[in-house]
Amino acid sequence: MNHVFNSTALNMSYVSDNVAGASPEIIDALAQCNTGQVNPYGNDDGTARIEKKLSDIFERPVSVFLVNSGSAANALGLSVLTPPWGHVLCHPDSHIYNDECAAPEVFNPGSKLITVAGESTKISPARLREKLTHKLGDVHSTQPATLSITQATETGSVYNLDELQVLKDICRSSNLKMQMDGARFANALVSLNCTPAEMSWKSGIDILSFGATKNGALSAEAVILFDQGMATEMGYRRKRSGHLTSKMRFLSAQIDAYLSDDLWLKNAAQANNMAKRLEQGLAGIHGIELLGETQTNIIFCKMSAKTIDHLYGQGFTFYANRWGKDIVRLVTSFATTEQDVDALIRAAKNSSA
Ligand SMILES: Cc1ncc(COP(=O)(O)O)c(C=O)c1O
Image 1 (cartoon, rainbow, N blue to C red):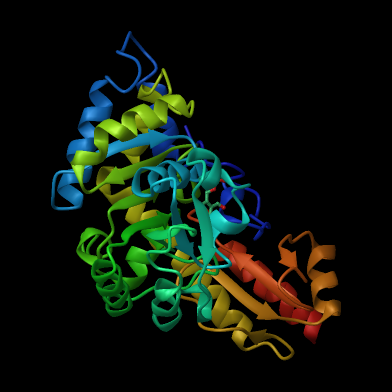
Image 2: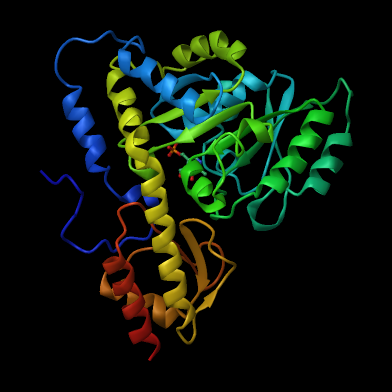
């Protein structure tokens, strides 16, 4: 049985990677785990199994807490790392700052988010150092406690391992914890071609929001604690936030299938490769200007209002004019095919001809 969402029709939406359905392997795993009675609240065998699998993948024992959304994963992780009088340093374009409706402050009342800008949606180390000297030790001000970085970033760029190391050194010397929003962790990993350990705890990350929903799961994200000493607190925090799902087997089955046979890496490679193909196709079209190099599955480019309207008229959907006049964002996913991408390139060519 083929479960691929819209499998025969062209995928014409480039609005987000969330517009895709779930991977057939994950839907199958859900159907398979539907029989029989299973211990609730994370006491299922599947949850134990994925903790073991993730410990192997990350090359050290980890504690894993499954939740339904990336926002919950981020807010919970940050709440464990940050005291109520502390602040989280994050990029002004970060999802936690812009798109989570103050969830980090709700989950950890008193704490604040403070922004540190930087090119390509990446925190600038120089600006971070500046922020860390501001009112340090002043009892009247919240104190820097945690650095949150997004990998891949909200615009699809990626911190390389050297950049992560610089941030780690700053954080270690200033006693800051590090949290990673990895809603697109797999896309970044495939792009860097490094190990999950190198891109996380070896780069100083204490807690990782390990995303799966954007990359083939139905609705499942794993909060991964590299310091298992924080697990007890996280357990209570997850429960009181309403994110301890009773039928946890349906979340663990998703992550189990996601990690099996490298599905997570294959899906991310497909999304990234399709973005590359799209980027290369658009590069040759008169009147289209690519904005920066595509490192994962998000492309930013500039095109005329005429081309945008033409593409909309053909049935393609994507964000335009949101990040500036004539700026278009195109996001591919694990479900995007070569056929999909070629259709978009053809339509863009026709409009500019
Ligand atoms: C960078 C980033 N972090 C986290 C999320 C997770 O958000 P949600 O709470 O919708 O699962 C998203 C989704 O758009 C995202 O782009």
